[in-house]
Image (cartoon, protein in one colour):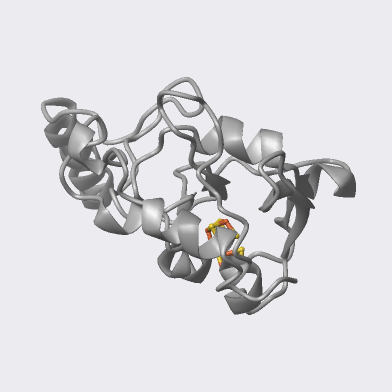
Length: 173
Ligand code: SF4
Ligand code: SF4
């Protein structure tokens, strides 16, 4: 009998406190600023084009070889990104690809609802990754708020990397 009274007392105590649970998926908690969700591609806020300069560093450092990129000749005669594939079933969300990228073109999004019923759904293309990551914050610089403009690329910030790629300083894949 004493146990029942104690239990009822705990219930009464909790009634006066704010609810600790939420009605997921209708409600979602904000993710931690440096949460490592699905890797995604960032785009230039003005042109909408992917920031990726097709250097291939992310694919090389990826410990699970889940990134695949295709380089194509650009109209200007150098090279540019063709397709960019992420096989998310092999990704371990380590963030190395985002850390190594010289132009912050790939970042860890806060996307965590990744369940699919078909294996094909685990494969993300450049367009899909850009749709998820468009104008996302630079993940490893997170900490100053999601809409902090200082985390968007500054004009000309990455020109030296683009020039290096155009001059083939990065070995072609
Ligand atoms: S987060 Fe890690 S495992 Fe996933 S694509 Fe990037 S480097 Fe590869
Ligand atoms: S490291 Fe960055 S710039 Fe280089 S291929 Fe990967 S996403 Fe593109």
